[in-house]
Length: 104
Image (tube, rainbow, N blue to C red; front, side, top):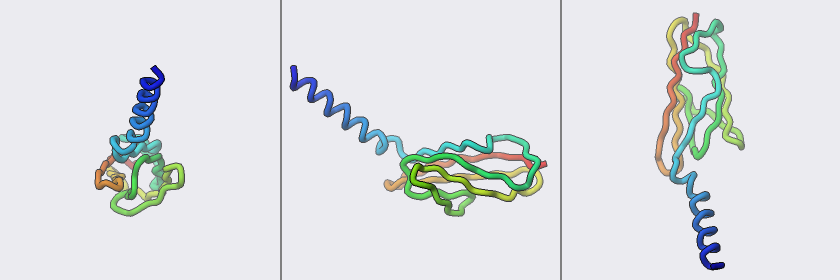
């Protein structure tokens, strides 16, 4: 009985530790929300990441803090704007989030 409990504990711990390897890179953008209309030409893009080795905003490398958070200022063009955030993990897996904003 003790052996079964020990085996289940080891398997559960292994699954928990490997979860970050299986999920790949994750980007979560907090602000601005996709599709919003903004009235200022300056905006800040911020959010959090997990399991990444590099990240870029509109093909320009940006930096994250120890907790995986990022914050970048952007100057928008009048009208329709597309903001692309791309991330890659150490295994070469990539993810991308695209925001569409309108500056009036």
